[in-house]
Image (cartoon, rainbow, N blue to C red; front, side):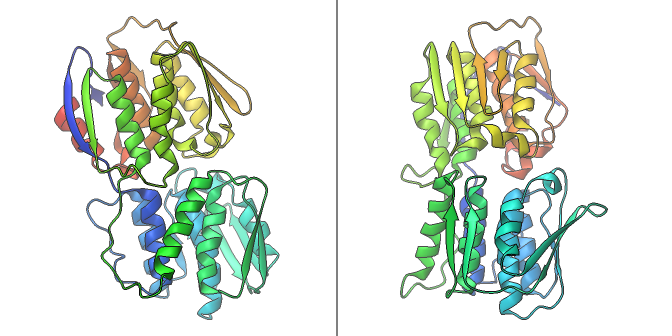
Length: 376
């Protein structure tokens, strides 16, 4: 697919899609509070949100096969939720979580350890690439390591709504703490005395918004982004601070709490700073793709030099050399890498030849329509 950027000027107004982070949590917390009638997929849903809706609908309807597709959030949230739901509702059968893509290879070790100490087994079936949950859950104090993923903590916090007599202890330094705070804020909203069922209304996604704001920074023209709440607790709102800090010789940025937007930040770094060091990026290696390797390869194809260590990524700007009119890039079947490829085209003023833009549907289902109307 050819995405044209060379020698074009753009004037775009784009509404940020609904926040996946908020949407996942709203659906699950509403479900656990008894609101089970808003689970049918809608036309604007991303693939990840459809996965969570399908899993919740399966539990509601007594189905013990939960299809997580390629959604890491869905899997990590639904494992503890399904374990607790299974106990409360007296379900004897094992619960099977099906996966697609790289999801089966992504870790759930902290959940296995936490739930395993309370009688739950989580077995991986290599032949079917599924996770099988069984055993008899016991109540009490649950202990989980929050240093690997905030999704473990959020999943447990939501599951505990079913067993209010049990508690959660988090060890280690929690990563992506803003996402834990987001979970807690939605739990509080539904715990408020007198709260009634309300229409499901989801704020704009700061992760997709980060891409759009970076596009505005790099494109020939402008992108006006609507639908983002400036007071949101979404962690990726930090993109605004990052963009303000760019335009310098050397910049160091801690990415512990904002790993999802590092690919976008790396592209901006290549074209705005002389040298940028991104810290705490190790978790990027176990996303839908190895995003450290993927963004390095994309930038390499555009003539940008990068380096990496186990937990850092360094991007060198002001040394870019690229003579062709078209840059050929891979999507790595990863929505973030589709968008980072677009940013490279905008920044380099080059057309982008990418194998597919389809993976963007995972988080930004309207993006391909924008591409067709504005870019192709």
